Amino acid sequence: MKKYFFFHLDGRSCTAEANPFRPETWPYLREEIGKVLFDCTEQFLSHPVCLLNRRELEKLRELLDCIDARYKEKLSLEFALEKMGMGKSRFSAFFRNQTGMSLVAYINKVRIEQAARLLIETNRKSEAVGFDCGFDSPSHFYKCFKERYGISPAQFKSVAVESDHSSL
Image (cartoon, rainbow, N blue to C red; front, side, top):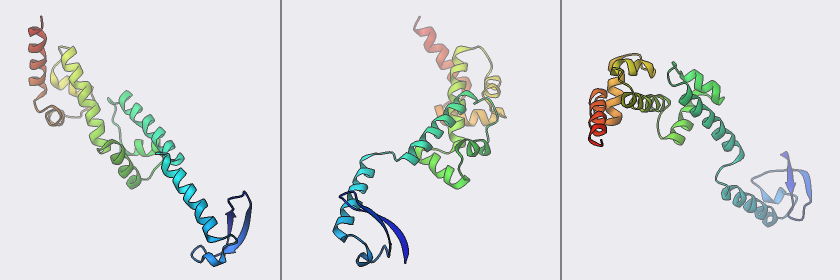
């Protein structure tokens, strides 16, 4: 048997050798320990974010802010893993759970949204906007843009220009 630290409802505590699966080895009555366990579980579940998760969510917010600020750069999985302090599989599951998409999909979403803004606000060609937003090739930019908006960057720009002129 191992030594465990036990707390009583009245504030007492002790260290005792016990088997966690055999209540008869516990230093306090099973019902009393069960009540403390129930109270702790209830407290934990009443707070939607535990302390560890809160820190992970803070790190995620910092990562997302960093992506928003540095979307033009070549951002890698290693960069994200270092920022989050997680392993690859843990990070991938955590990121997808929190954002609903993979890291690459999120980065592309940010880049495409910035590209859409630049297409509307400037007279620059689609290819130049794609490169400025961090895409390595015009075909990849076109594919991602069409997946997001359902039309090509050029069509998006012409629709935006038409709607702008029709509001005059």
